[in-house]
Structures are given as structure tokens and as C-alpha cells.
Length: 242
Image 1 (cartoon, rainbow, N blue to C red):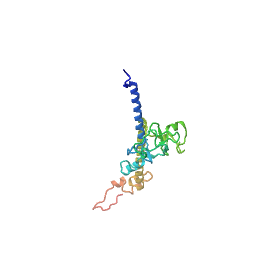
Image 2: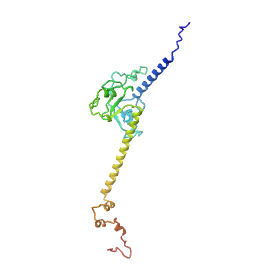
Image 3: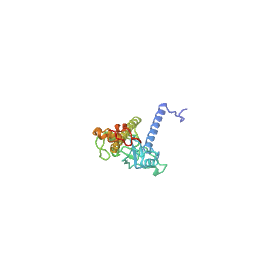
Image 4: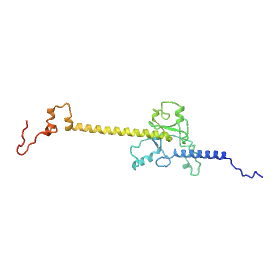
């Protein structure tokens, strides 16, 4: 008896297989997100742009949304300078039945050749749009951009598809920037109004002018003395009041 082929897997083996499957599914979802336009939900197509929250879009989709007025014209995005992966083979061009390797991605880091598959962190420089891996920034310390050699500052670095905590910080910073911009716009408008009033030479500005004498101000009917002066009528036409 026995050895009949009815092998029963142990509990530890089932748990390992489940964890491995969950990790694989997570990696596949991450890889799909890095290949998908977050606006149209279609496959990312160059030229590709990203916003200050680290989300990537096909530039064509953004332009179409602006023309359709589904997003404001002031939409703040930066065109990305991506490094193509020469070993990547597009499954759409090979046919739908071709095997899609999630580790092989359209783009990679120009310094470490790390693939942009959602497993490793990538950042882009808001000044120039160059995209590199965080690994390259950590391993090769430099004050210049790893992509183009231009200016590199930590405050200009935006993480692509950041975690929830960092994404929330990006949102808060963006709201503060918008509020500051609104305040500056309001102050600018107030300044324009004051300037127009000054240029118009309105009576109110004349009466408040400390450089003008009361005698000069009294020449204008807007002064308080002129307002209280008795008015002529049909009996005393144009009387003189001294």
C-alpha cells in the first residue's frame, strides 16, 4: 500500500506558494502601471510627461484633455527624457500570444541600466526632465544631473509613482504653492487698481495728498467746504459768498 501518487502538500508549502504568487501579482501590477498613461488608461506613448505628483502621461492625452477643457490649460507637467531599453521587445508588435516579461521594460536608468519596472525607485529632474534610478543618485554622488550634466538640486527631484506618504507630502507642497500663487495674483491685482486710481487723479486722491494746500484743494468742488457752500436759487442767481 502507499506510494499511490496521492501526495498531500504541507501547510508551509502552501503558504510559500501563496506569498510567491502575491508578490508576482504585485510586480505585474507595478509593471503595468509604469507602462500606462494615468489619464487615458491606455499604453504610454512617447513623448511622455509627468506631473509634480510623479504620475506619468502620454503627452498626446494631456493635450487632448486641455483642448476638450477637461483639465485646465495651466496643467503643470514636464516632458521626460527617458533612456530606451534596446533589449525590450514590444509584445504588441510581436503578437498577442508572445510572452511578456515584466522585468524587460521600455526604459531604463542611463547610469545603472536598472529597468523601470516598478520594483526600483526612479526620479526625474524637474529642471530638465531627465529620468534616473534612485540607485544611481545614491551610488554616484554629483551636483550635476546624471542624465544631461545640467543643474541638479534635491528640491527639483520628483519620485515617479511615490508611496502614499511621499505622495501626500507632494500634494501638501503643491497646495501651498497654489495658495502662494493666488495670494501673489491678488496682491498684483490690488496694486493695479491703486495704480489706476493714482493715474486717474481722482478727487479723493487729491484731497488726501499732503503736498497740496487747503487753498488749492478748495478750488475743487469735491472738498468739504464746497460741499457745504450755500447754493444759488431763482431769487439769488449765482450769488457771491465771501
